[in-house]
Length: 533
Image (cartoon, one colour):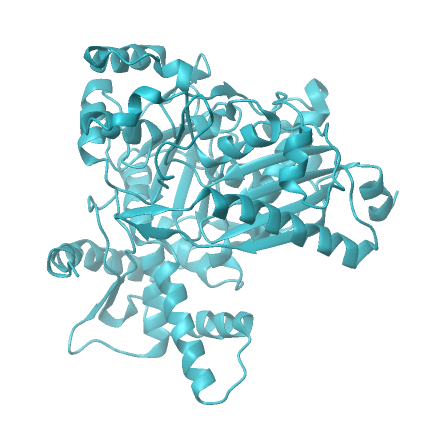
């Protein structure tokens, strides 16, 4: 069958992912080949010191992305889809959306970018003997409790963005285990929230006498391959304003962007790893079921794959935002000079030119900290660029330094895992917008981890493609085997990519830059204290 016939008959899977700056939809056939895509750009807002999106932002973004997908299908195939074989929603992990019994949002959506939960995260880490990052949902819940927020007693459903949207589309309060691992610690044997830690939490809040328990307000945990409900009539109307989309489409468990990134890079088996580089940057190394780190690290999150394998994560809140801001400044300059600007070409030329720069970036030192950075223990951010008087201030070094620094914080966490813990890694795959210009950021990442890095030819499809694959995996059922087997045999057997080996000179240069990066954190801390306007 051709693509048009597959779309008409619903022999497809649709994944929609809410990223920090773009919502993207990817439609595939039953072999995972991309048939069409859709986009909707959006941006979070800093309101009353909270990074947030409104419910209207979310709903408009969902519909706008779906409209874009439908338009792309119509343009390519001359038809408008009425149904799909399966559908899945994914989104940036962490943060909090809290609702009462009537479904009313009790407080503005707080995204992963917020770092206003230090007191709660510290207390829970001590109580659980398990690292609780500031952005995790349970840290937000406990911070609200510590602050005696009046609405906490009214909690009925507390969840993350992808789980919330899935609830609106299906009526089911569930989430995938990978996303759940950013809500509350997971027991990798029972594949559910860690019961001992749940009991510890209930003890901590016993004197509050709330009319709910933690398990009552959190979403149910599901594994990849399980069914997570169907698109309801109300859900279909929410997604498609025209009324063309039919209800009844099976939906897979919603997942966080870390989980979909693992799927999209075939990095769900022990010994594999991936690094997603975008607005935030995070590295995931999949461990054996019985592997534990030698001690608790506040810089390392312990999460899971979408089918429950433990994963050590180095998560940096800040990635390419400041890099993009500088590229936009160059765009503005070109427009001022009357030059036409193609952003793809501009990024490509600037990135490629960075290869001419010094291996250690010539003494230039930027920090793209738009928000707090957990790995470097800063609760706020100030984008910063510094250099010494004798630094080699060239365009190539400038761009190289900003590309390095977009991987700077995540490298600090990876150094703990690869150098201190000696976590075995067979392969590392990079994906996300940073890798669109071939061979540039990929070679810098290989230098950062001192290991070969592969970027698949379809790396730019990223998380929404990964969610579409999870939807396909649900349709396959038990005959598909494990998630890893399904991906290896049915999806990635014919996928092509490029592998770059680390260049020793680049490795040495990145290590020098990293030493400067660590020493310069004092500059960032001083900027936070000084720049309060």
